[in-house]
Amino acid sequence: MNDFTLKDSKKYFSQTLEFHKNNLLFQAHSHHPWTDVAYEAMEKYFILVKEKLDFKWNDIFNDYFPRTQNLILEMLNCPAHWEVSVSPSTHDLLVRFISAMETKTKSENRKLSCLVSLSEFHSARRQFQAWQQSDQMIVEWVEVEFSLLKMQVFLEQNPNTVDLVFLSQCLYGSGYFFEETELLKMAGMFPHIYFVIDVYHSFATRPLNFNNAFPNMIFLGGCYKYAMSGENCCFLVLPKKFPFNPTNTGWFAEFGELEKTSALATTRLVFSQDGYRFLGSTFDPLGMIRYVSTWEYFKSQGITLEKIRWHVLELQNELVARVINAKLHWLFPPDDWSTGNFLCLQFKNSEELQIMAKYLETKLVWFDSRGHVIRFGFSIYQDISDVEKLALVLNNY
Image 1 (cartoon, rainbow, N blue to C red):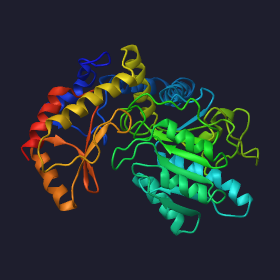
Image 2 (image 1 turned 90 degrees about the vertical axis):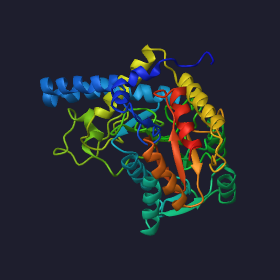
Image 3 (image 1 turned 180 degrees about the vertical axis):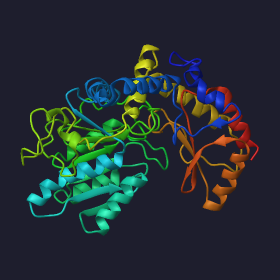
Image 4 (image 1 turned 30 degrees about the horizontal axis):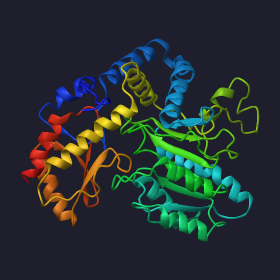
């Protein structure tokens, strides 16, 4: 136990845990349980819609949206003046951001050139593959598992041929985590290249520090996983002086200017400021509402990202210490800084994985898998007793 240990934090998830009282929930990395506060907030939103109907958007954009923006900047520890846009998915934001980048390369009569890691999540991987195969852009792929060296060497050898780098801070297939200092160093070495850092699997897992982020850094992420807020609350964070506007654009991008201009009265494309320009069209704001209600409540209860990280590390280390089954192999052991909030068991092939998966299902263990790894996600809705039960299941395999 240490000064950061969270006690009785299960109480914040009582409805989900009561429903799953016979299950071991270790799929936080796939779908994190929602808090009781989030449920209450959704009920309040129904009342808001009932009472205000279409005028609900005044509350959303004048209240929930700026609170969401401020919380995201605070949890990333980004410069306070940076721009935050939201959307139902990171894919939506990625496509819109690329459309902005292409305004630059098209004006120079050339294709956008991107360097993408081979460890990206499915939507980004598929989209870059599609752009590459359709000959819309030039895409180079590089291995980054456990090291940024190959990416750095590629950039050093091709300093003038890359417009954009796409890289996750925490790799979803292994849990390997790049410290902010590593990412800042690389972005600082190549100021003419934009670095899109996918923080989906690192956001809300620990204190992050991008306070000294360079103007060529962009952050993409969401609140589905460890931010505990479910769908429809993904974000794009970038400097306000980012010089390009998207061509993939919806009417929310001029929402703040609707009273000043009308699309029927002008042919000039107008973009609102303060995060609006990368918004799309009408979306369900419940994700923002769950996110704001959960994390503002946590702040009132003294639950910090530092406490969450130490709680998770304690659980991870306990599990690794207790699992003595020689047939099981951790892909990457827990470490203070270079491990995400999940651990992976590695298998030789998909057949071995499926045998283990079926065994875990019979033991009512909830988990998720990718490729040849089974992932166990950790968070504050678990305690040592859950780890003891999981270790027993694994040792009996």
